View 1 (cartoon, rainbow, N blue to C red):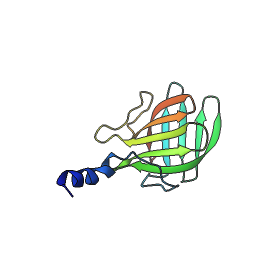
View 2: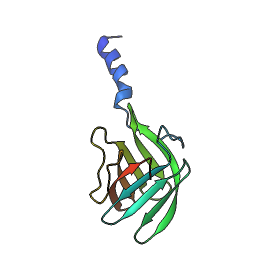
View 3: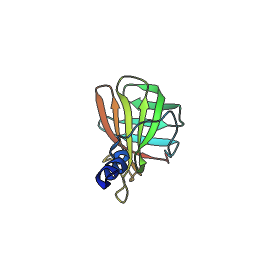
Length: 128
């Protein structure tokens, strides 16, 4: 086998997309409290089975379908919930803690949250 073929085979796993595994917290710190503003909302992931979403107009319980993390990124997670287009991308903000303009203190993680056609950005922390 040529060295070019060996290099291609060795790099193949690095090119694979992040996939969600069966429900497994994959290192996600639980419980996790997430918040956002304009409009005001919150998402609380208490365990690997359910989360509670609150907004100005509703409060619902979401069932977690799977939790996984990005390849080679142990502090970047994708949480997929039952329901059409409902998922959360949670990522470590590193040296620059996440700051929601309406929050009083920086949070450990950033969050992009999809709920069907809705798309929200916020911050998360393992502390309420």
